[in-house]
Image (cartoon, rainbow, N blue to C red; front, side, top):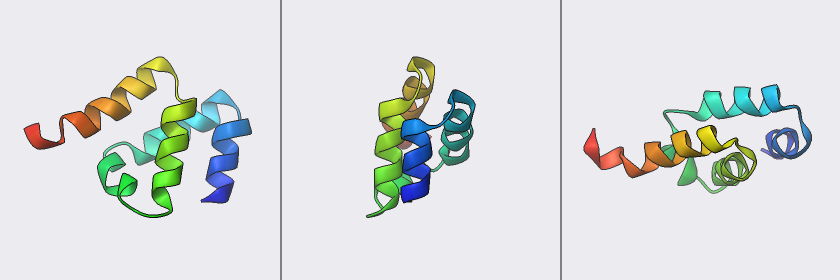
Length: 65
């Protein structure tokens, strides 16, 4: 948790992208977990514009699928 957050805050863009890709498909589930939600929050904070859109679309479209 803390290591992942540190990488999101201070790591390289490609490292952030790898983490965001890894949580894709599980954003809603992880955002409801006490500790994993902190990682999701950092992902949204440090993601590129396109990655943010992808993460938000996943949560918003949850009921559509």
